[in-house]
Amino acid sequence: MRRVTGIGGIFFKAKDAPALQAWYKRHLGIDVQEWGGAAFSWTDSAGKPTGGTTVWSIGPEEGEQFVPGKASFMVNYRVEDLHAVVTALKAEGCDVLDKIEDSEYGKFAWVIDPEGNKVELWQPPAGQ
Image 1 (cartoon, helix red, strand yellow):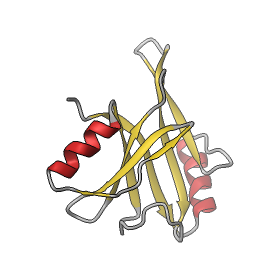
Image 2 (tube, one colour):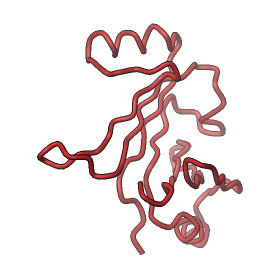
Image 3 (cartoon, one colour):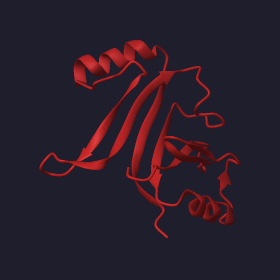
Image 4 (cartoon, helix red, strand yellow):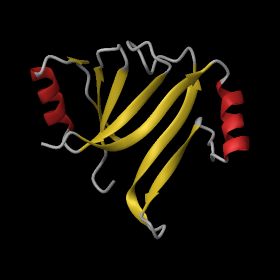
């Protein structure tokens, strides 16, 4: 079974999220949207879309998105079969959070790595 197939997103906290978002937009040209981030569409070497995106987002420091992790960042990894990966991680004794979320954006689950970082696993909806 393949586990991680790519990076779906990178999320991090900031003391002043709007100011940091503006800095990245001005100085690095990231098209930061109203929701606090950008979605980078995947393309091939010729620039043609290949059916995937990677999200980049800055949120407020007091947000709960990373709990129970204590890091100021969280990486979202793409997987092909979320339930199979979660089952394997549990069997291997990993600290997998009980909740699996199923939404229009796909299926999500979380595992805590040995350093206490919350890691998000994402199975995109069909076609992505």
